[in-house]
Length: 92
Image: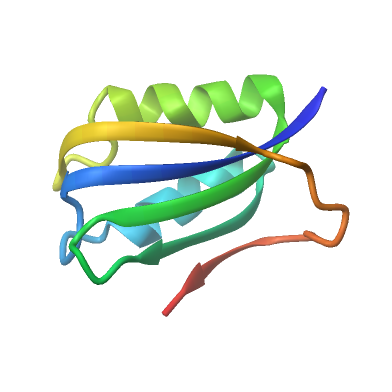
């Protein structure tokens, strides 16, 4: 089953390579979407793919994500899948 979620990651997640490591993880899992820094210091990840792959990404985040990050919260919102998404990228 394909699903799309928006994930907000809180903590020390900017300036530590978080977007790059998230890009690597999402690409490895075959997910599409994006990761971007937010003005308030959090990171937003919008991701679409198979339920199992999304669950693995969320589990990776909940277990701490990249070693350099200090995640304090992971909030997930379900969205409607978008057939226009074809790749995962970092938004600047």
